[in-house]
Length: 300
Ligand code: PMV
Image 1 (tube, rainbow, N blue to C red):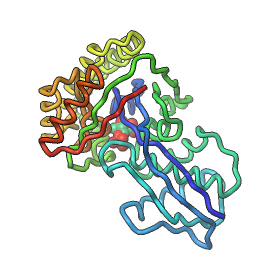
Image 2: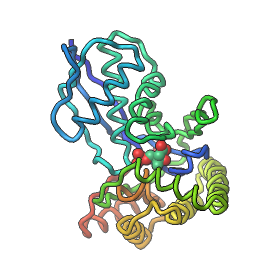
Image 3: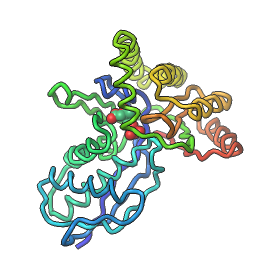
């Protein structure tokens, strides 16, 4: 018997890193992600390739979480997500594996249950993940996510209705960032600069509240301003990079309402918001002529 599992890629619209410390963040699933094919086997196996080692670790953690004891072989992994680009490839893979494991084991799991199982794998990869990646990878759509698990409470997950579409450009910097390293960098910054960090966190809380107001009103200019303000603080925490800053400058030159890194930073992707699909197409051409790889994402 064979099974197919799926998980979405994602981009974080606002609140990466601050979400680890309990500030509500906003993420949108991409229309594509990861797909795995799996079958029963005598021992666990992964195909050769960039996910061989991480995939095996994810598989064993997911099986333990779901109480599955039989061996499983992942026979194929199909991905449209660049690795280490902040588009949630590891969470999408973990959710896809959990989905396939559950189907093969005959478990009738909700997508939330798959997300919880994938979170166990995310912990192995990232140390202290907020859980936003596996949640959006499992559920899709646009979410407001508030971590409460570090306080011994249940995380708050709120699907958002898209009343006003967003025209977004995901710009690959071509440089891979490592989530674990970037999250640890922020933890070290906090330890060394408690008072400054507290002020940065307060601004992140303000932005998080303002995001909902701007989102409900369809105030794109305000959303762009919030992107820019978030980027200033992420830069201050040391999780941006020269290539991200360059991509952001190009984005602003190409008429973006706002631009920021998306995901953990240190490389990966930048995310720019445009006024409408026409402005987005123009910006896409400008980036392509500079040799960038870009992805158009129209939310809604
Ligand atoms: O793994 P990435 O690059 O999608 O980033 C995850 C977002 C962080 O806020 C940096 C970490 C987390 O666990 O929320």
